[in-house]
Amino acid sequence: MARRAEVRLLEPGGLGSIEKEGLAQKVVNRILDLVRTGILLPGDRLPSERELIEIFGLSRPSLREALRALSMLGVIESHHGGGAFVTDLKARTLLAPLDFFLSLSESNLADTFESRRIIEVEIVRMAALKATAEDIADLSAMILAHDKIRHDPVGFRILDSRFHEKLSVVARNVILERIAYGLYNMGLDLRRRATESPALIAQSTQDHTRIVGTIAAGDPARAAAEMAVHLGHIEESTRRIIAADSAKRQARRPAS
Image (cartoon, rainbow, N blue to C red; front, top):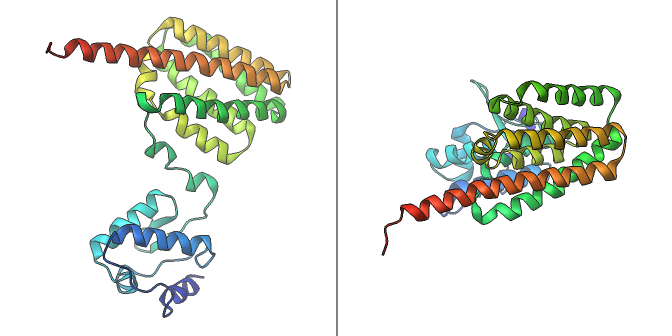
């Protein structure tokens, strides 16, 4: 398989040299095209750096920049001493960098929570339809664990992340799971500060309890509604933190 990929890459006219403008990005785009068209398949070994430099007509630093980008995207992976290989291209791998590229800001707050509602409401709806007895037992155990961390913000944050991750697993859709993970990780610094409040921990505990109850009852419509309420509470607490930060910045500005 490795030889097949190398031969196709090296065929005259198969790639050709690329222009000197945006060299690394052009290499990334070309490799992605080869993957999309099936010229490169999972497990194929890329040619050596020396050969790729000749194929693309670029410098070693530009090539390495492109390979790093492809690695971050989950398209290739390097084996120590064995070169770079096309990954299995599973959804989990290709969507892995989503959370890396996204960050929460005041300008995209509304879009972020709109996206979370679209994704996580559907996840919990699917969870209510697909949950097994074992899944429900796991979720119920998490609810019981909430009682032990009522006054432990760090413990709550760990449990909260496990809870939302478990819902995605129960929904059994790896694409939605990865997107939800990325969206959940946006603004964790703000969430960390919000969860210092015992009142917020109590509110989230109540929300989680109702969500699990609807999943256990196999009621997707109620599960979706409860998740929407929960996300509304999260958005409200996040907005309060952002507003407080904005007020502090305004207070620090010298009078004109």
